[in-house]
Image (cartoon, rainbow, N blue to C red; front, side, top):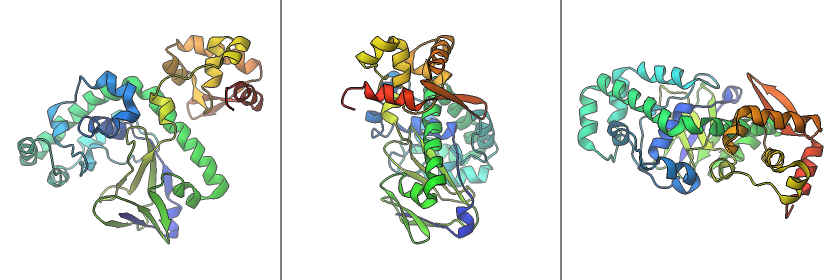
Length: 322
């Protein structure tokens, strides 16, 4: 098991974060570990014929250690992928070498040995391959992935305000639990214990970590607990469908949008899910908002739409079986 030992001060330093580079590294991992593929089937069917470059694949171990420097815990809540790639480029060569030596078992021992011999060149090559993997494997899906992650953070933040951190941590995944002053993740390979020692803890929901949980516990990285985000089926398991009664009342497209707003979403995310132009979605959202079925709320630089009580009662009341 992995045990994260916390003090009272650490509990005050817990925060949520989003990492596009973590999603990229775990999208790459799906090419060597088949376990996530059933959860990500539409995505996997589109990308399976275009695997990442060979160095990036060489450092993936299906059930073992993957170097942390490839997806370092974000220093801020929502760093851009460009900022994260710059952080990887700044990794000291000795840190790169130390982490590459831990990769075992690996797909290509000779490739890993060559990278260990020249860690600076290896780091720069891996950054270029990560950037390519981001653009090909994750960026086309990013609006939907980001929406899923943001919805998870919003949901758990409400729980945090209502019930406290213990309730939130205990509900992240059945493999994560409180035990005294510790957060325990099991099973997790070798027994590992990390005293948070004032460093706090990052809680990071992820789409591509499914069906696993993960913890970053080695120094110099900030301790991070990565857990499966809620709603993966809605994200990559197909589009929402509009119940026939709702479609007859509102029209098919507006019914689809209302049915799809069980969790708050932005115009861009709804457009990506349904293959519509953002301007078209915006017009439908305005109509639904004008009818009192939706409300909007700004979150940072984004505006998210959510059902009103009337919209929720209408959508759920007309959905079969509810």
